[in-house]
Image (cartoon, rainbow, N blue to C red):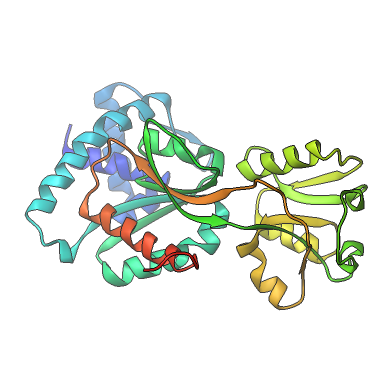
Length: 302
């Protein structure tokens, strides 16, 4: 078993794509395939399942990744001691849900890459409810998630910014004509929401159940863009983080309703495994994220 095989395995586990892993490692794809095959033969187990075009870690692969991660972290730590931190190089794997990927992280990635162009960034979009697991499995170094305040014994979680959620409708929607809304105005309404499982959807459901608002219809979507487009088409009322619809509101394609869900406190969190060694690469990325996202909060100074 060679260190380069372990590093290749970790990279494939992060990208779940042999070609992408080869690109990151500057190998030809056949080299990556041969290394993984040799590692599987030596261990006597399959580390990945090939489900059509999709690659997934097996249970054995997940366990193996957890154990070798500390070995590779130690190696990275040793390398950092003998290299100039101003010229960082290596690979960093980030995961987040699609909202944060589209509206919060691009500016973070841009700032980080402008400072450390030698670092390879791998990004994977992961549903909010599965992000913590990627840290425990070792398939991500740092994750960003939308959630209520989080208490975790296994993770270090840092809230960066409280997100505002709003209700949006097309300008010609019946609710857009009302300057003040009462809960009975929502009876019979079609709500355009995320699928069950994310924190703010759960809080949305709980709020309307407590208020006794019934005779409403839900249309569930996997991403914010689909929700916005249906709201623009006049299909119903969208419930989304305010940041996702700023451009559409400015263009007059959507309007914001004067209705708020009380006690809805959802934050953009940054998290990593509490036992993970924070390499200079990771520390630099965390700092870039704090700087960029803090700029969005009027109550913070940089």
